[in-house]
Length: 132
Image (cartoon, rainbow, N blue to C red; front, side, top):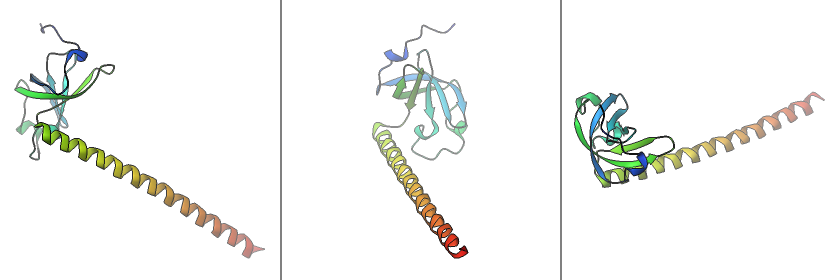
């Protein structure tokens, strides 16, 4: 029988907690930290070195110390990390930069589409004029 579970709301952010790896998947692992839901430990948050095969680094039943990065009480999800705080802050900053770059490139593509539409419209008008 599982021990009494804490509510996700009662798990503090930023505090290191010892847990047990419950499940290992290609993209990360779920860690039982004693809450009513396991914390997702993404593969990018396991080691500062590149992780090729996650099972070479972590396995089910292993005791690990993780820091809770975020939680969503409504969805009953938590994100955890085994990296030091500086490395996590760098990854968060980098993720934000990548999102901004992606958003701006999408805006550029949208404006490019409008330029192409203007060009196609001008060509149609020219063709109509020449056909008359």
